[in-house]
Length: 259
Image (cartoon, rainbow, N blue to C red; front, side, top):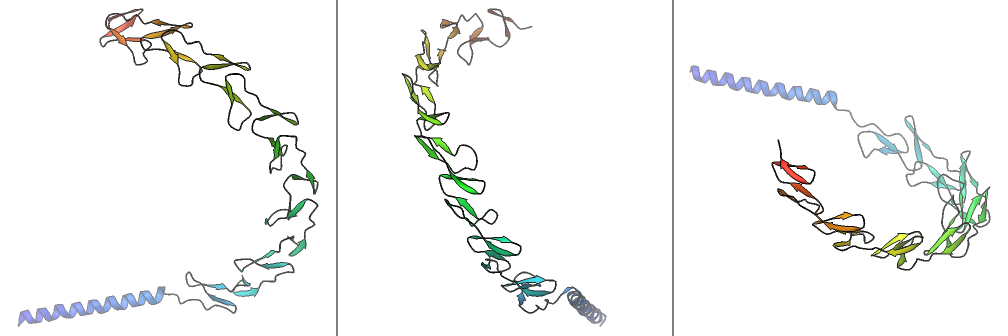
């Protein structure tokens, strides 16, 4: 009997605890839950959160949605919350003013600007479009500064002209630039390409415009002389000098014990 009473008491305690937790959670939910706001006229519930947003063609003014007044020569933008001027017009004093497009220009749809741009080959100057005067062997570039033209590949600008580039003998023009380079085995000297004189036991370097000595030789003036490797030494990683073995140090042209 005593055991049954104890089990009934435990069961009753569990039921009471469950009821308490349910009541507490319901109370917290009722305190923190905020019902969605009621949208005003010309609005609808927001797709995000519990607020609201104005319909297309209206903008928010405090707790209401007022109609957007689209002036003449304008249209609602893609968002539906503002307006933009038609092509050939610019915003001015809450309206759209027709743009006076000068000769050799076209209407421009950029949001900020004069509403027009000069045609290719022309440049803006004091509210008009002036033609860019180009020399022979040149092409125009779209730029609001500078000359407005560049020389064709193979030509170099000299004053207001484009002069043909000519590479010297044993040279070649470099890409689309206005320069030139010497062929492999030749070195630039002033406006010429002279042969690289490679001495005995030497070879052209990777660039091809100078030379290096073979392994076991070192450069001395314009020649490659054989290395004299003393006892206790070996040719180093460069191949053009020597270093002492472990336990020895370099002293002049020999290796002596390291103290």
